[in-house]
Image 1 (spheres, helix red, strand yellow):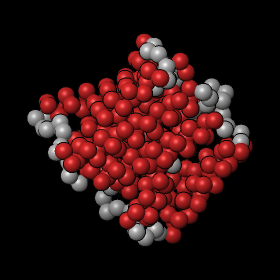
Image 2: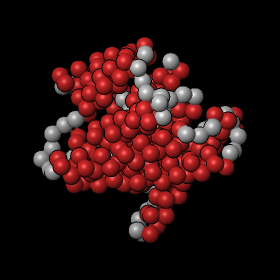
Image 3: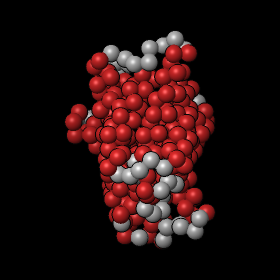
Length: 274
């Protein structure tokens, strides 16, 4: 039950981060948006980290590796949006990033029970329903990029989650900092501005703090038990984004998105009851 609580917190925070990031992306490039988000997340994690644990070298190294993984995942995701569509690439990446950690648990003999399997299956199906949309560009290339990006997201979760409870959120400091360094250097090499204007940076930073806190919640949950239930629950964050668009912007939901929202609640309930 503790893992589900961390997953629910992550679902909400990452969903809010995704919504705010989309708000900022119209005034900056994807690279600038994510770069500001990573650096803001690193600073926020650094402020909180001393109260949650101690610096442990091996865990900081794992955090850095997970930072490389999340950078690669985002780059692949962006390419998928270019060569295909967001509606195809994003849900495939999210589902893959949720399912692979469950398989990791199974390989270690920590697989979920019957109710957990049912809940995770409903959750994954709900994730597809809420975020899937048709596109007129290559679905095959979108699916391929989604699978690769999702696999790297899974590596990020598994590696950063495989850290000591004594390290708290220090691995997140290493993760976000490493990702920020990689993106900043890349921007400089491409002779592009590493950051956007003040307005975009402000919203990107708020998004980054929320996203960093969400990933930290997943890591804290994984440090205390199996990672599968935490990542599956946390990966339902698109449901929060859809709900915020509906509530705050009055956008009409499609019937399959409504089913997805209801399914997400049902899936979490089954996982919690396992």
